Image 1: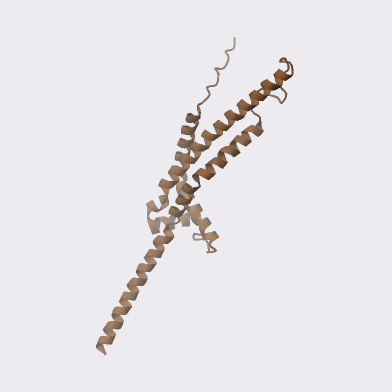
Image 2: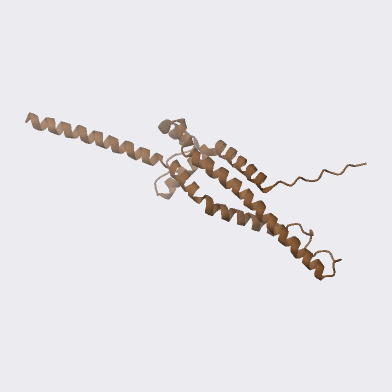
Length: 194
């Protein structure tokens, strides 16, 4: 005699939040150096400058040579916060939206059955089950909410990733000041001799 499969255990919204947060943190920690390179490529293309790197290998070696290994993780704290927050929040709002759609669907099915005399089966298939359109709407709703909430975090992350330009500008300014001081000292020394 075949045994029935155990009933599926339904996760609570906070469990989806925890799962999404954990997945976002793991993904970001592993793939962050690629994200950093991607953002720097995009920034270079957007400003009209030529690509800062000739290949992925060139990109990694340039960053490591110029900024050290830590340069590959510039902006990581903001990315970890943003990714964990975004994915956790997305799954949380997605599950809430699905639950709301399911409740609305079941309520409308019960009302329809009541109006049809109670014995009719629900039209639309699947009884009270959600249709693909409901999942699409729930995903759209969750994504829209998280875009508005998390956008400031992603702005900070991107600015931290592009901070290498500020470091390079500071180094150039320091070099110009050093050259200017050396030139001024030479001119002063030359004037005193004459």
